[in-house]
Image (cartoon, rainbow, N blue to C red):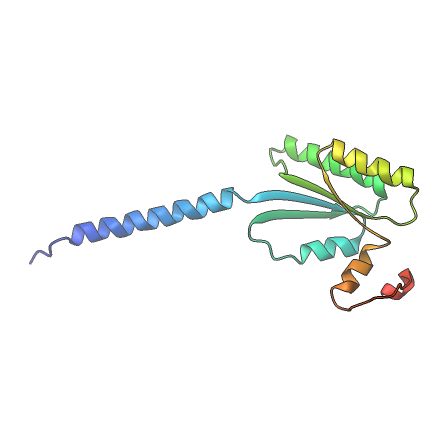
Length: 146
């Protein structure tokens, strides 16, 4: 007994599976590669906790101050290009701390001239983290963040 159209059904299923596979591969290839170079460990842990599906995120904690952090990000970005793994975005994250205005502004200019994005916190990143969990309408000291 011959069933009419059974070959067509098999071909349609195979074609549909092929199209779905191609779509998944296209979505994977469209993921952005993002590098976040942070000053401290708290910042790195914060960004690592993001459940990203649309980007490949690499976070690095340098333990360095503003200008040294920018230089590190530049070196890491250049090394990635040599490995054929360039980043679509590079972010430099640091605290405003007690750096002079000149040093702080120079770091931002260095980052922007390298094509990097900059995010900073006044006074410390830990306060930003605390504000996720608790409303504060008064100033607290750095020692009280913990």
